[in-house]
Each structure stands twice: as structure tokens, then as C-alpha cells.
Figure 1: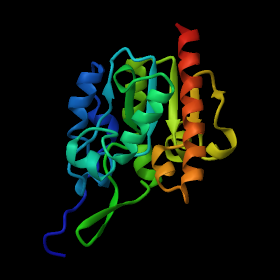
Figure 2 (figure 1 turned 180 degrees about the vertical axis):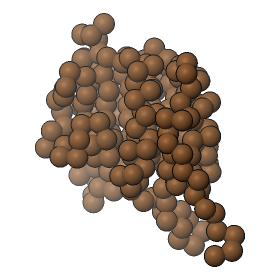
Figure 3 (figure 1 turned 45 degrees about the horizontal axis):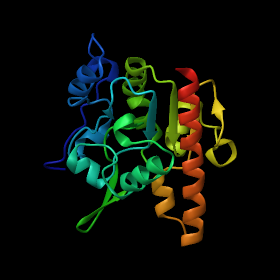
Figure 4 (figure 1 turned 60 degrees about the horizontal axis):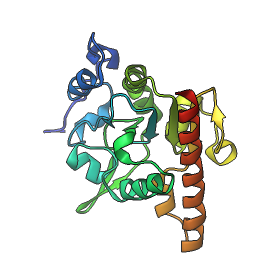
Length: 212
């Protein structure tokens, strides 16, 4: 079909810099062609935050506003995350936030771009970036927000609803993604889910303080 882009897919490892600091990784990730998502996304959305953060939060993928801004968690889910962090006695400036997938996967619907869960191939292709981030940061605890992030790290059989609220493999805590709260059927369900998210963030803070 005329004008259709042919995906140029190159192994993600080919884009990783030799010297892997957060700054060098962020710069290198701009040109990543490890999966086809780069074709429709506006830009790579890499993680951001303190280079010595003791707590890292990993979400699924950037959303529409994150894709346009080039920054993670700046949309409605990000604002809710900020509220939850504050309720847990934390601040965005004290943590590092990123996503398992660095490009926005969506379905065009008129003037809108509707979020689509990233395919397993994209999660796998992006894993070297996430691994490199965690290696550079060496946090005390990693909070996995939602099923995609949790299963990317802990395997496909992991269930957030079953196993949230505890430290797994020494440094991982899985919890609800803030976007799940936004989809809650009513205010009571939203408040209940918010309380669970805050409780898990408090657990992360305690675990990080004990690891210092």
C-alpha cells in the first residue's frame, strides 16, 4: 500500500550504550527501533527521577499525554499517582518513575487515540531498557504498577490481585496501576482501590528505609 511505513526492527540490545547511566540510556533510547510501536508513537518516553532513588515505580506504557509530552505519568493516572505518593508520605521528586514499554500503543478512533495494551513482543523488546535502568539505579525496592509491569518482571503467571501487598523476590512489590482506579465502577470502589495503592506504597517506603 503506497505510503505505508515498513517496520525496520533491530534488536534492542543494539541501541544500548556501552556506558549505562540514566542520562546515556535516555539519550540512546530516543532512537530505539526494537519493536514496531515506534512507527506510530510521537516519541520514546523514558523514565525520569532521582538517579539515586531508593524506590522505582514501573508502569505499563506511556499514555496519550505522556506520548506528547515525552515524560512518564503526566496525565490523569500520573496525577492520581502523585496523590497516592503524598498519602504514603512520599513525593514524586524522591522516586524514579518509568514504564515497561517506552512507546505509546494505541488505536486511532476519530480524533482520539485510545490506549491499547502493549503486545507481549513489545514488552519483551523493551525489557533490556528496563533492566538497564534498574541496573543503573540499583534501588532498594521496585513497585510494579499493574499486570503488564508485574508480569514483565515476575513472569506471566503472576497475578496482582492475588499477590499484591507483599515483597516478592527480595525487592519487588506489585500493586494496582493508577489507571485501574480511574476505571473503577463507582466512587466507593475507587476509594477502596486508592487505599490499597497507598498501603502498598507505604510498604515500599518501609522496605526502602530498612534497606538503607
